[in-house]
Image (cartoon, rainbow, N blue to C red; front, top):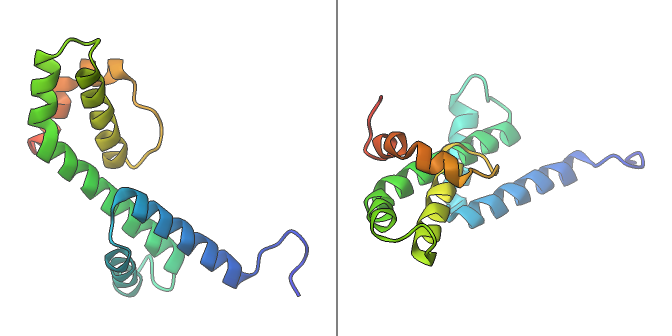
Length: 135
């Protein structure tokens, strides 16, 4: 019997697995590939051996970061062109900023808001990251 207020290990595992699946779906990450990568990490990484939940967290974070970098790399030239040609009060400009924010949130593995001022202030640095610069 499980004490009141405590969750059984089986329910907890289903809970974090379901949360990971929802996160993967939101990010457009294939659940089977994510589960396979998490299993690979659990079996092949000494720090994650036997740690299914931690392995899934690491796999999800890695996939999210890779998605953010890929999206930023693939779309940055378009974002920059829109921001250069559209006024800062236009829907196109706002959409470009929102897309950059989403890509950076994934790249930084965070759900925290990234302020427009930050994006515009560090546009050159963001561009370097999008282009693969180590600087």
